[in-house]
Image 1 (cartoon, one colour):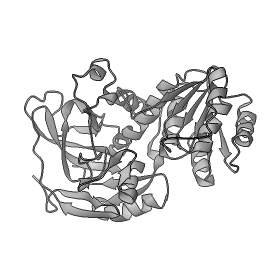
Image 2 (cartoon, one colour; image 1 turned 30 degrees about the horizontal axis):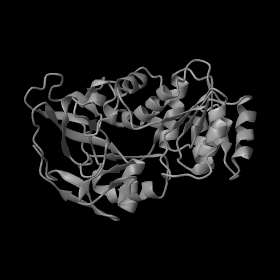
Image 3 (cartoon, rainbow, N blue to C red; image 1 turned 135 degrees about the vertical axis):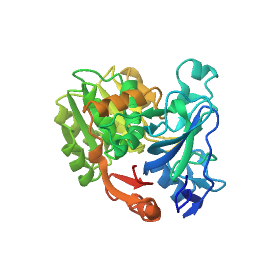
Image 4 (cartoon, rainbow, N blue to C red; image 1 turned 135 degrees about the horizontal axis):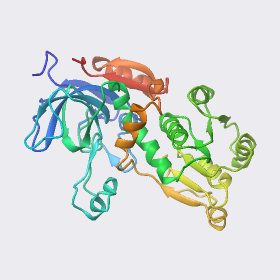
Length: 353
């Protein structure tokens, strides 16, 4: 049953207008579970929707509940659910595909044209007291894994998917461009997958200090717009050109750097979303050196891997959380995220009991 706050929800009414209001408590449909939400992390896309009313091609045209980095406790089962029971603590993979199109059948369900993804217009997200979700996209977590860690499986899965796309393996030298949350989880994933050395770049000294603290081999502060100068710093740090580069900023100079500095025959994975068209990307240089350029869209079949990495202690994501807020402080939480304070802002939606 809903408590005195009912189903308190973070509703984006329009650009720059985020309010807390009660919404109906949803009932689980067939093969769904109702979840008493516990943790929801603020993603950069949530901030984009708030500040700009859009994120890439997705435009907010009607009020929408935010949030998709989440975990909670199963509170009710829908018809047909057998993989979970009431009281199970779960991490929630926010994208649910159609399961029957060619992409789903090929195992690349993240490319499904009919995927329903939390907090992507017009779909409501999970930043509320109660939420329903497909049971097969909820992952029961072991007792020793916290609900904070469970919520962070969402960004970690992006890093896991990026590293898989980059074919990172034992002994690789890796460059990660951008030390924001996605850059940091990509760095952690690369290390866990066997990378011998990881260098990470950023404009911000504090973010680079955090990257070094949690495992980066080297850090390089970007203090020039000339990618050749930054490339020299990266090569000097690694003692060689990187085997793979994971670009997480979306900035054109950073993409130029990635393509120029990656060794011949290497891989550049584009995770960050920048301008749709760029004019000074050195494609010919990359092409004649057979540098593979690969895109990344969210993740696919990566939640189990991310959960295993956290549960086994291979990856520590808890250190990424720098701010905690109660759901009643959601507006303040988004302001902290908007200002770029810290790394990961976590919202507590309810009491774990």
